[in-house]
Image (spheres, rainbow, N blue to C red):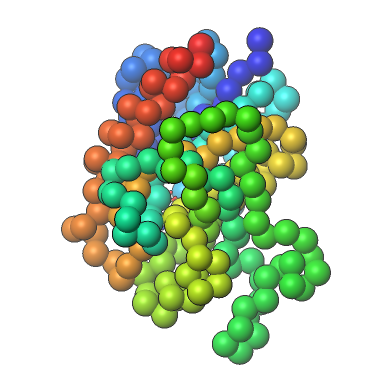
Length: 208
Ligand SMILES: O=C(O)c1cccc(C(=O)CC[C@H]2O[C@@H](n3cnc4c(=O)[nH]cnc43)[C@H](O)[C@@H]2O)c1
């Protein structure tokens, strides 16, 4: 039987999923129909972990995590299905302009989550960055260039790996904060994680 691979940056983001399915407490945990891979934060850690673990025994990869939202109409703690994700910093600065790697002739910087699963969640596009945006000028620039709804530090790396291996993939994230000058007091990480885990527990149970 082919399994699903659940990928998250930190174990904290999947706390209740580990509890619900009574899983062993490691960075790679196995359940009957799915495995969990904890990669560490960021694109490099994610790509490295997927390079080691992503094989054709998996029919689907689900990237779960928290994310920032550029869109104030998306409530903190609510879930989105990120169907397209862009490596926002991959390219070259040219004075005030930014040249993507596509502009430079070196391939794609945007990847789609390929799957035939229909979910009752808003479908949005995201950016993936190395540093959480917290500077008004950078935030404005990202919105002008890419008009993203969400920001994470791993999403595009997961979509990239899945495209390389031709494995279906979903990216579901729960909004913990708005993308704005850093103000940790306004982040709702606990609520975002609770709602993310409730969704994941139901999805992974129904899938079985
Ligand atoms: O600084 C802290 O105290 C702190 C506490 C908990 C979490 C953090 C993070 O930096 C979380 C990064 C983690 O979450 C994703 N994430 C969440 N919001 C954003 C965002 O606005 N922009 C980019 N990434 C975000 C990200 O995918 C990381 O995995 C800090």
